[in-house]
Length: 298
Image 1 (cartoon, rainbow, N blue to C red):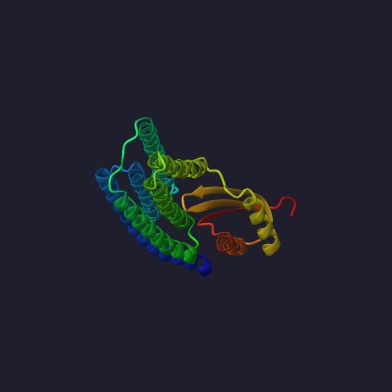
Image 2 (cartoon, one colour; image 1 turned 90 degrees about the horizontal axis):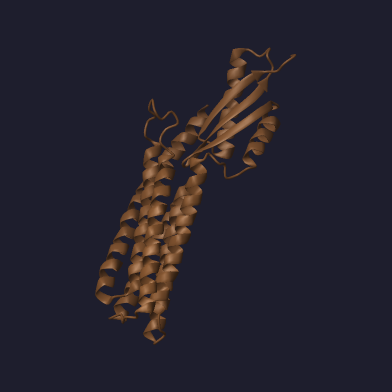
């Protein structure tokens, strides 16, 4: 029982630090995006404009991560018996649709730029801005990844990957503008299309991941059997069924075990608590319900 409580205390500390660093990522990425968009209005670079939108989209992902971590600690209500963890997935799904629209907007303007070419001004400013944006994004990404690895947080790992993607997109944009600087045509438009491809991929990933959570799909299909085997091996208890449900950052498990009907209530309680603690620690499951069933004919 004490182990079970300590797991939740450790997770509370982890989520608190994760929330702080995700909050910082929101402002860093949004600031980069706004700066790139403002400078693009001066230079006329579609690549810089697209990279700015990409940074804002990544800032939106950081906001969803922060929002999800915040909602985890909100008390349950009469209407939401399992809490508010899935709100994060719903927000991610809606944000992904908005990001798809941004990507389509960039592709449309890139197509227009190819059909009706226009010169960009001050490409040196564009390249310096892209290099600075990429460097800041990567530096922030490694900070986020350090915290994600420290506490083994999947959501923050995703946030770090998005920041790395944002930084790499800036460097790709720099390369396309550099090629255009040396006289290769349409590179600014092509750079915008490449960054739009990054945006489409991010939206696809977000839609896929959030849809699985909203539909109660379990990412690891073998987890059901692994839990059964662990309980049977560790406690010599037969397991009738294991039902797993994702809850945002965590998961919920309902486990049906078969116990000797001659066991006293105290003994049943003791074995149930031991199974709970062991499964929570080994498989990182946040909420566990054990339903004991008497063994027939015993």
